[in-house]
Length: 270
Image (cartoon, rainbow, N blue to C red; front, side, top):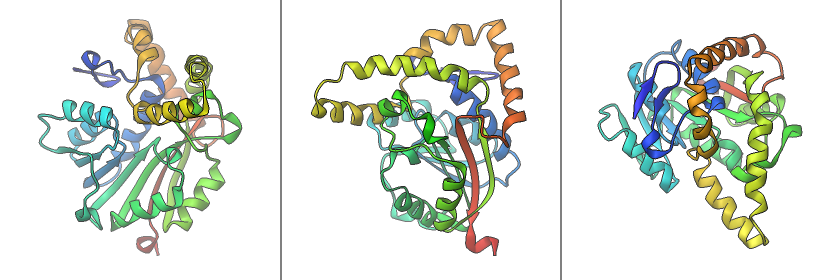
């Protein structure tokens, strides 16, 4: 395990590397969080927990909740010596009204009842708390990668705003990130996942595979690991830096393939 100056934590011994879309999202999340007051953070579905490492280094006190056994084991491995990051695999009654921030990146689309999920997450926030989340954008872009990962939906900007406000939040910031790099690499991911779906025969086998894929979708990096040497090459790093800066010019458009949102509890905003 080591820390790359542009990509953050890399865990090659466990087969985890930061995928390009993760790098695009991480860049925006850290930029937004740096402008917010430090406080207690709960990340839902923290995956490998590498973003918690970034936030702890910036002064946040962090808890990562991960229900997937493989992801939980990986996050525990990453943070086995991290004093300001605690990884758990169960929900605590003590969370009610405790956190300054609840984070959920690429999680809500995996939950069938997203209204119930948002209500639960809101209950874990302090009266002045903020929800920071990301979701895949544009239902018209639904593809085999969504099926493989166990998604229930993708979101539209207006739909996400209404859903969040009806759940007791006021949207403070909403952007569409990823363009143009995420759009370029999407067809490659779709082809890779389409091949995996072909191996799933009956409906029963498909549902079993769907549950398994859902559990590992945040940490499986088979394809990305093959390409990571190119990503970390002299040219690859410079290309990625250019794409990170390029996406900043399109955040107010609908060209990207993911939404990143910050909302505050509505009671505090009145």
